[in-house]
Amino acid sequence: MLKKKKVEDRLVVYLEGRLDVTVATEVEEQLIKLIDDEGEKHIILNLEQVEYMSSSGFRACIAILRKLKQRDGSLKLCNIRPSVKRIFDVIELTSLFDIFDSEDAALQS
Image 1: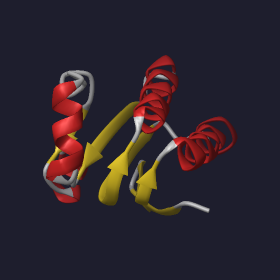
Image 2: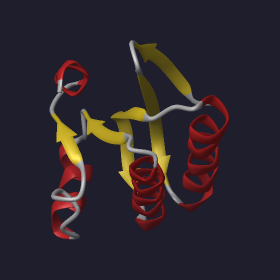
Image 3: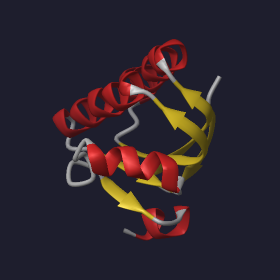
Image 4: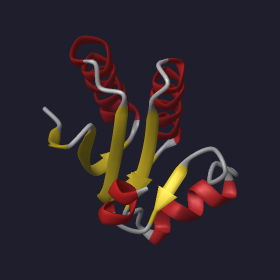
């Protein structure tokens, strides 16, 4: 189960560990369930505890972003570790996502 908290109309989700092929699919399914079943439209993924993200993790983030955009929602990422951020930069995904240095900055945007 995902760790999460509601802040006004936004849902902050805390991910941790390795976001690889095994975990990414489960995370994506849980987030889609929150969007479809609970009507969440604005999600902030706090990646402070994510030490590694594979292509499956990035694919899951893109799938969630698309699903939220279809519903006039938003996906924001925050607290990305430098090692994971470098991968975002290398595969040129930083322009696709709204990325913030802190959870507070993401909530205030």
